[in-house]
Length: 131
Ligand SMILES: [Zn+2]
Image (cartoon, rainbow, N blue to C red; front, side, top):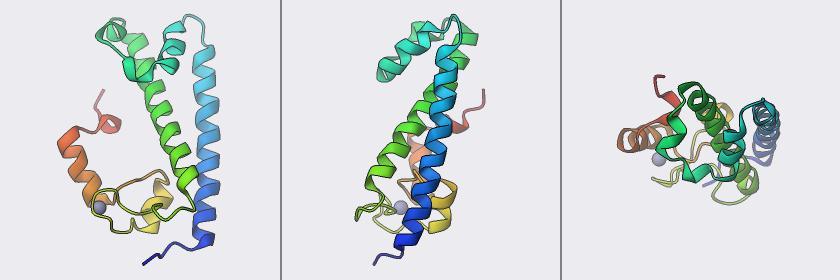
């Protein structure tokens, strides 16, 4: 069963494009900040952050924000590519459809709300980290 209509997918696609543009602007702006060469390194080696990167707290906070932006941007790009595919809007864990209103709130969502909550309990939820 597929409840997402073409119109709904296109609405989500427009939202994804808008959010991705905003993120790209934000990322570009923070990469241009003077003395932030670590961020450029980060952009190229997102998966290789080591403990040295958190030595300078201020830099670390910038990098954490930038990292979140880049992760979200990557998720949005993935969502945009699969937007009209059969797997879009289907929960990765339980294979149920993700409600449209959840996709509107987060077009890059790959899990339904209960599965996402379970996933975050198991793996942590970096986006809501209290720092
Ligand atoms: Zn699910």
